Length: 299
Ligand code: PAF
Image (tube, rainbow, N blue to C red; front, side, top):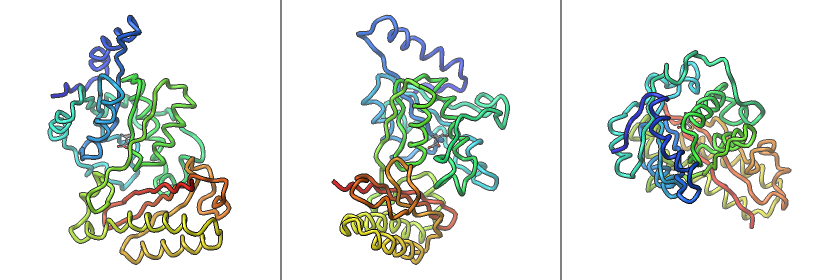
């Protein structure tokens, strides 16, 4: 079973010997991996741990429902908290430590008067409908990086924008941490795994895989139309209509360069120079806000 810590100081003490070995003897390097989560773990999270184990000797999983990344009226209070079940699942994939702090341990002052992120990357896509969300993600991930001081950290590619922001954070704050993006884990019918899928009713759960199917369809069509910018716009409009007709309320459907540095849905990006595009969607189905994305590679 993984050992659970709630206090920063206790976790630091537990991890110190591995750092000692790392420092004293370069040949017996003990690499530490961090897998940050908000708990209520599913197979997607367990896959992150398995990937972390391939890159490190010791795997720390944090479980913390981070209040600063939830907006007013969002599901912070109702977000499922299932620590015992989570720890049992983590034992099956060989996680070594669980860091499950209470709010006061992470935030002596709430809201924290410190921000670490800036720039357009945090206000576009999910940041537009969830203002402040990525500020909360930025601060908690920075704190976790400072507490655990991992060599490597693993995040899911389902949260494509979050992953891009964390890579930016690591680059701009000079963290010496390798960031690994793990492929999306899907149910057999294609729905991307997410803790929020449990908000779906039985009927909504049957509709939900349509989101992935529509992204796949759009990606295939984009590859077929050989950079015709007119057809690009028409295809986007068609996909938007199909997703809406399936029963979703779309927050956004955007095609961008894979670095997220382009104007959304601007047909000008659809040219032979941009080999790597990404289609990103966020859509509501009942109470669940579903995210998905699909890379389109023109090589
Ligand atoms: O992706 C998540 O579960 C959260 O945003 C993270 C990275 C654990 C920060 O709270």
